[in-house]
Length: 100
Image (cartoon, rainbow, N blue to C red; front, side, top):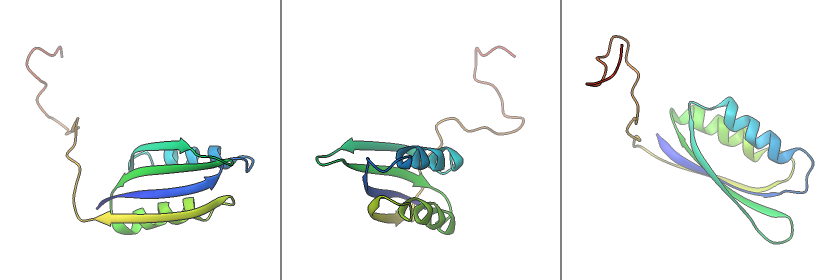
């Protein structure tokens, strides 16, 4: 599955931004990218692109949306995959011109 977790949160809550960043790092295999925008009145909108099994995506979204200071959180998933940019396969041939 691929999808987004959309969050709106109060950025004046102590430690909240660090907690959200730490969760993204904790799930680095599933979190592809994120974008946050500062809004008026200490509000932040953050959109996090995720990929993986649906149950894992739900776990990640639940951990993020249940944090104190998150005022709204939604997850949207679709059955699709983002192609790998740099596949790591054991025993794969190196690209031409690459040093061994």
